[in-house]
Amino acid sequence: MPLTGELEHLPIVDVIQLIHSTRKSGTLNVYSRKGEGQLVFNNGYIVSATHSSEKLKIGKILLESHIINQAELDKALGIQELSGADRKPLIATLLNHCGLSKDAAFKALETLIEMTVVEMISWTRGIFTLDVDEINVSDDYRYLPKQLQTVSLDTQMVLMDALRIFDEKVHSGEIQLTEEPLEENPLEELEATFQQEDNSDQQMDQHAEIVVSEDILGLADLDKIERKKPHVFKGLVAFDPADIHRQLIDKTVEDLQTHDKEKLVSYLTNISTPFLGDNGMQTATAKSQAVIIYTCDEFLQHAIMTVCKKEGILVFVTANRHELDNLIDRALYKYLEPILVFGAPNPDVEDFSKDAIVDIRSLKMAQYPHISILQLASPLDFTFSLQSLNDGVRAVFPMPYFAERAETFAEDMINFLNSFQAYIRGCFNEERRQQFAKLRNSLSGLRLLRKAPDISLLVLQFVSEIFERAVTLIVDKSDLIAERSVGIIADRTDGPGVPMKFRIPLRKDSKFKEVIQSGEVFFGKTDDGTLTDLLYPEIGAPVDTTYLLLPLKSNDRTITITYADFGQKQAAQVSLDFLEFFVGQAGIAMENALFRKQLNQAGQPEVRH
Image 1 (tube, rainbow, N blue to C red):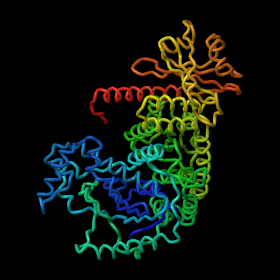
Image 2: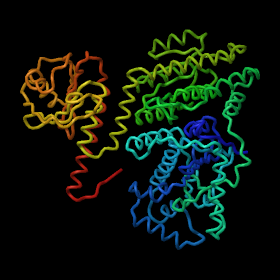
Image 3: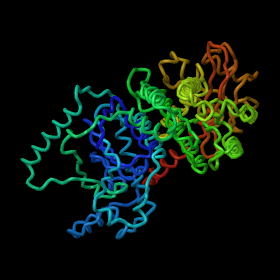
Image 4: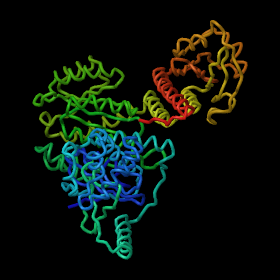
């Protein structure tokens, strides 16, 4: 029987991850004042997406991605119109008659699913219904090319992409995070709304009602979006997260006493609440925070995912060593700095013996030296714990084994999860991780910029997040020209000021000249007369003369230098690797902006990928 719940109590991100972690199959329908959407799952993997928004049409996505042109779309639509009863979905028509490749079709369909999830993430009010073990696939599926009929998307990868796109849209202003009006009984409210719509439809349309269910991966005729509405809500059962916890505990810890199982169910249920941001509003996820778990223990996967969600931390799980790199690479690509957690050894499972875990862990340390790694281990196996610390893991957590302490397993597991939750909270509150959050936000903003001045300004703003004062210096032939600044002509909290426009002659032996020629960042103290004779008379001398020179390069030429210091405060440690990485990405964005400008001046159309 279908289950239902309210988005206010269980955000859509949590619902999707819960379905994935429990490997459920079924159809998830989501209803909100902002729209309606549907996701179909098969063993926890997303295989279909539908949304009522006019923006989410497969033809529109193919056009905007420059995968097809208008002539090809018109040809496919013409073929569909002439086909009558033999009319096939748009994707199938494009594949068969317009030269669309299977790879391009898959990419467009993946984008469709991502954008459907993006739309749903912003919904804070409404309801969802989950038809477990029922997959609604239309009869049109038989028309699809055989190569696309068995495709399914990794839910964790889709969710990471969707959250990154969501953040970008929030930064660009395309999505406004506003609290939706609270309804006393959203089920009754929504049922009444649907009833009114149905009555109106019957009066205005004499055609038979069309029940829509999209094809696998959204392959039905998505240019004729229709709404899938339940006929009634009466038969729905309230969604109870406790049932999910109970089912998984019954499956994975079979020999545990019933009263101990209920202790674990009660604990997990009590912490299964939405994460609230600093302003008290529900958020999709806390920025920059991710945990990747490598373990074959299904209960541990589920329990850690639950406690991390209490902290607003994204969790991704795998028991496949070959998927581990993909998860880490995707997280880093989405500007998430993950903590990698290795589960305790299990000699009965391949790839999870002590030797196998040590080998995989050592390989990940070599591949990703900057990632923090935690190791879980039996409290009785101190040799393995000491070896893990000696190998360089950040921490070793003793976790309970049912076989070792069956009588206190529930209490031990609750204590372990509480300690793990507190430790993870501390990790993500560290200064470096807060700086990484700023880096991630700035990189998300960088993706949206198309003009060179905007890119240069974002570099200044990023530097001013770390330093008290900063100014952009444009590199001219023999001078540096002072552009906009932060914390110099106005208070730092006021943001960038107007261009300062004074000039600094480039002296032959100055550190400024050296940085321009080498393109390498400088942070420290020097006796450079350029500072005391030319710069400080214009901006005032700082208390501590430690300063930063950050070059922005484009096409192998330094075009700006960002000067920064600590103003009236003492110097502090700075993560230069973050600064170097960000300015490197800004340089690439600058090259693309200049290239687009040249194309526009030449009258050529802009090429996007």
